[in-house]
Amino acid sequence: MAEKDKAEKVLEDYNDVFADIYNTLLFKEHFLDEKNLNYGPTESIYKAETGDMAEQRRDVQKSYDDNGLCIFSLGMENQETIDKLMPVRIMGYDYSTYRAMVVNNKPLAPVITIVLNFSSTRWNKPKNLLGLFGMTRDIPEKLKPFIQDYEVKVFDIAFLEDDVIDAFTSDFKIIARFFKEKRMGKSAVMEDDKTALKHVEAVLDLLKVFTKDSRYNDASELLRSRIQEGDEIYMCSIAEALERKGIEKGIEQGIEQGIEQGIEQGIEQGREQGIECGLKALVHTLKEFLPDFSSVYKAVIKNEDYHNVTEDQVREYYYS
Image (cartoon, rainbow, N blue to C red; front, side, top):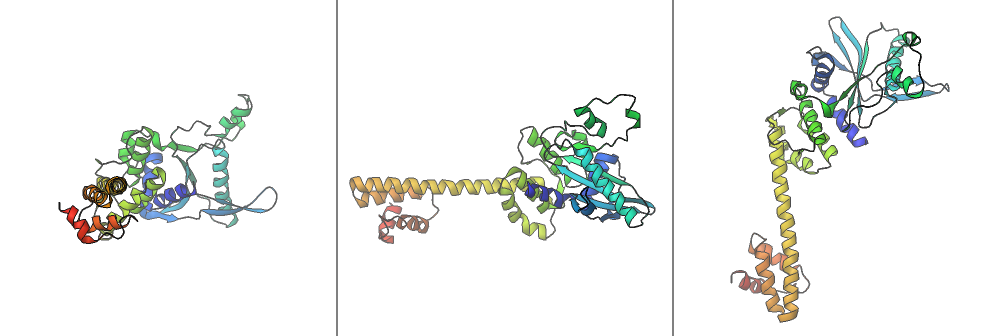
């Protein structure tokens, strides 16, 4: 869980990705300019009910200042499970931020928090305080107007409509598409996607931890020189790298299986017909899987029954 959480935060912390998420999901227009975003503290200290000082951590938090438009805090919370008490939790985060402004004698400015639901189910718990009250007790209608409600903005990433996903302009478009296709049981490898990536390694790290597919690490290695040279990397390029690595792995496995098969066959025939017949069978089998004579010879002498065999003996059967 911690590894997934970290991978999400690394990508979202880039200003272009952060602004894109807010603009596309919450504001539904280009409202925030990434150049006006500043890093905000993700940790805050507050006094708990016991009187002791306690700490709370935000996932990603930034401030915004654009010639008079000041937003003290833009928060982003990632959820892989559905927290039924999310309204209370977000209310606590927002309150502590407002309180920090008061304590530090700063002019009050807006605090906004959104929740990104990365689970494969829609958010099915209340998104406001009144909804939470309704889960445990009936609230008289005449009382509701006097209760200060608190509502959280939750976005189900795996259920976004295609037009919303297409509206993203940052690497988050790939992430949103990935989670939707994953939910629908489609391939996590988007070989037809020609979206250029800006934060390639952050995207690959996130995909790796959610798919548990180590090939994303391999793809990062294969593409590293191109990344360092500033080449544009597309999702289809990553798909090609994954496919190439998969083929290489398949060949390696085939070779290993062929060696095992050849050794077993050679040993069996050696027992039945003598060492020379067994050697012949072993060499002929290994030739089908290994690229050259040197590889075949090394594979032969690894086995204790044939470790004293000379190159000339193996060569005789290799070329026959």
